[in-house]
Image (tube, rainbow, N blue to C red; front, side, top):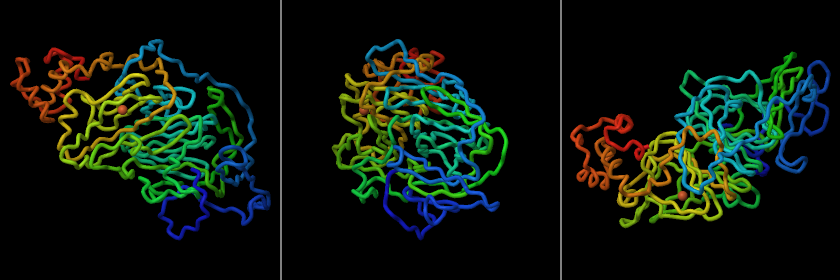
Amino acid sequence: MTVMLHHHRSEPEVHVPYYHSLGRVPQKRHTVHRRPDGGLYSEQLVGHEGFTGTSALLYHVHPPTTVKSVRRLRDMALEADTDETLKHRKWFTSRLTGGGSPTLDRVPLLFNSDIAMYYVAPDEIDAHFYRNAQADEVVYVAKGQGTLETQFGDLPYRAGDYVVIHRGIMHRWKLDNAAGPTNLLVHESRSHVRPPKRYRNEFGQLIEGAPYSERDFGVPRELKTYDELGDFRILVKQYDALQEYILDHHPFDVVGWDGCFYPWTFNIHDFEPIVGRVHQPPPVHQTFQGDGFVICSFCPRPYDFDPNAIPAPYNHSNVDSDEVIFYASEDFMSRKGIEFGAITHHPDGIPHGPHPGRAEASIGQKETKEVAVMMDSFRPLKVAKQLAPIEDPTYHTSWIEAQHAMVSFCIGWCGHQTPSCRRACSTCPISDAATPHSSGSSCRSDILAGRSGNASVCL
Ligand SMILES: [Fe+2]
C-alpha cells in the first residue's frame, strides 16, 4: 500500500493502511533500541524496491539473518494445457479434491508473466512459515475465516476479504476450521499491487468518489512477540521454486515496527458499487491495480434505473485483455448454469456476452445479489494443465439458443423463474415436466441423471 500521507490517528478503530505502527520503536530510526538484557534489537528494513519504495522498519529480538541451513525443495514452475484452441472455457473448482496446506497445495488456474491465479480449499494449518519473494499476493477468501499470523502482528480475515500480502511478508494462515471450510482464490502478481491510481490524489489519499476509503481496510492490530530458540522452518517461493530455510529462532520476534508496508485486508462487501441509469462498464468495479492486470469486484447492487435499461452487459470483445471471473455466489446476471466456485475464461480475440434470454430477463429487474471476482490481464493467459479434469467441455457453445430451452425448463421448475424461463417451460418437450423440483441442486442432479435428456448444458 503506497498511501504516503503523514498522519496522526486519534481514532484507533479507523483502518488505514498507510503509516502504521505497532509495538515499541525508537524515537529516531537507526538509533539505539535496547533489549531488557542490554543488547540491541535488530533493525530490518522491508518493503518494495530496495530503499526507495513503500517500506517498514522492524525491530527483532534476534537478527533475521541467523540461518542454519538452506536447500531448494522443489520446482514450482507452471505448466500450460496443451490445448491452445481459442475458445471460451469454464471450470468447476468444486470438483477439485481439496484439503491440504493453504500454501503448498494450491492448484494453478491461469497465468502469464504478470499474474498467476491459484485455487486452494485447505484444511490444514501449516507447521512452517511462508514467504513469497517473487510476487505480491492478493488472496480472495471465498469461504472461511481465521487469522493471518505475520511478523507485523495478527491480521484477522473473514469471508469476502481480499488479503493483500506484499512480497517478502512472512506469514502463516491460521484457519478457523471450526467455523467452516476455507476456499481461497490466490492472485500472484509480479508487480506491486495497489489501489487504482485514479482513485487517489497526488498525495496518495483515496479521493471522494472512490468506491472505498482507508477506513475500509483491515490492518494488523495485535503484535505478538515470540522469543524462542530452536529450529524454525521457513519456506520461501523464489526462482519459481520452493526454498527451505531453517532459522535458529522463531521468526515472529518483532517487538515493534512502523511504516507503510504491511499486510492488509479489504472486504468485497465494503466496495461501494457505482450504478447508473444505464449499464456501467466493468472499470467501475475495479478494486486493485497491478502491472498488466486489474482485479474487479462484482457486488450486490441496485440495477440500472432507466425503465428501458438492459442491466445485463452487452456483447463485447476483450480487446487487449483476457477476462477471468470467479463466481463467489450462485447468481450472475449474464450467465446461466453458474455454481459457487465456477471460473470462466473469455480470452482476447473473440467476443462474449450474455447467455440467451439473460438480456431480456434482466429488463426491469431491480437488483442483483451476485458476488464475483474478475481478473482482467492485458496479455494473454495460459491455462494450467491441472484444470483439464474439471473443465466443462461444452461451455464455448453454450450461447446457442436451442440448448437453453432445456436449461430454462429446469430452472423454471426450481422456482428460479424468469420471463424467459417461463416461455421456455411452456414449450418444453420434456415429458416428465409435471414433476416440480424443490431446489436448484436437485434440478441439476436430475439433469445429471439424464432425466432431462441433456446433461451437459445445465452445467
Ligand atoms: Fe466480459
